[in-house]
Image (cartoon, rainbow, N blue to C red; front, side, top):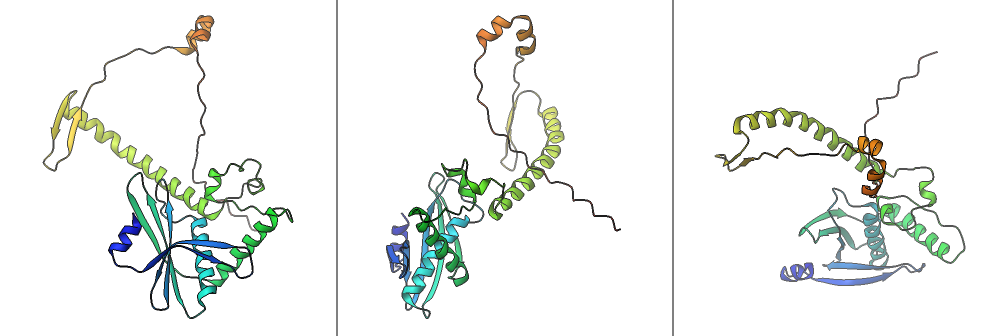
Length: 253
């Protein structure tokens, strides 16, 4: 799809460009490489379920490897830039994270990490593990040494902070909405349908009274019936995020 977009715009580009490191068995494949007069722009495509506010660290690392290898191939005089194009195909949305440039201080540690991974795969050493937001998709997460000390990487810390902030906003909004809801139901009554002058649809409906089972009493007075009617209930993981109060200052001696 994006290939057709780029072609319709008359851009000069190559697809799936393979670049090899001259000293290590490390190879990258650039999704789209745009070329100008001594200018290059790397575009890394990512399909994702929900576009994050900031690109994942692994995406940025991958882009830096591509730009760094391209820098080795094209020389220091070449002007090189890069971007990450994240696409949510389910929602038909996309977002470009732009303005990246190659940096030796980022590229060199990544190549060293890649060399270490190759050595670990050959059985020459134990692998070093680094936690990231993508650990939840790894089938080897259980027992991984990166999670023994409960280290929280920065990209996860940022998401925890965002979640905690949104949770506080949600609770504050609910406190404001509850009295408004009561006032509106009092005005519109039990059954109403209408549209305001500004185009907001309003409807009230009444849910009929029903009955429920006192499971505690049933289990106590009729244990056989309770056992016969019981069925397994799936568990779930509960997430709790809250801001702790600041630690008290140490008293002066």
